[in-house]
Image (cartoon, rainbow, N blue to C red):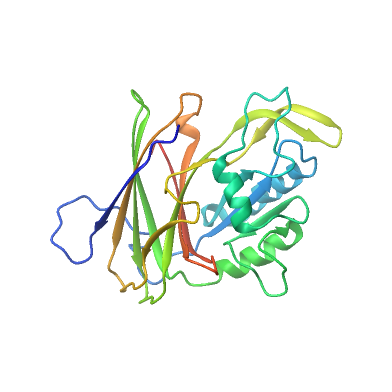
Length: 270
């Protein structure tokens, strides 16, 4: 069962003695690195999906930590086989499928939650991923996102603090989404040749930390350099490997556009 509490802390210019995270690779300056979010729709019954997952790994090898992936097991191919040890389906994944749109084919993924010019929806095929990722990486970030985690193995309690710092004045509603993923899960996956029991599933969506799948509203007017921190508490299930769990946090528009302004990832046990 998901156990989540949220506390919002305004940092800004106050004389706060609270420990603050490092913001971005260059201290939060305007030349901080842009990172891109790719949300892949997949399923253990999807014989074409391993090709999509392999393409994401290739793109991550190219772009390094600037490309952050979440694999969402939802839709018609996500029901586990009797041979599967795990059921990767989640209520969050089902809700994201509704929020982001049903793919027309698989493999399919959403890049920074954008509808790109000429596309009919957010989910797009893997042939288009490299070009759209490259174009997003070329954009200057409007905010910085930093993540701190405190994990206690004794009771598997996890505390997450996400700090958001605008790099420009922004006058529109924004939201914060915080997802929890698990990497390196070995379980059955369908291939055209049959079932592979030794397949490694990567960056699998496990849950969300905010109450609403559409994100936590964080305001509608932001001043350059004035930071906000958001605290979340969670208890990891015993069958999840804490060392392979990651927090993925991103700031995005409130809608109807959902464009992601910046994303960050942090290992739970770091």
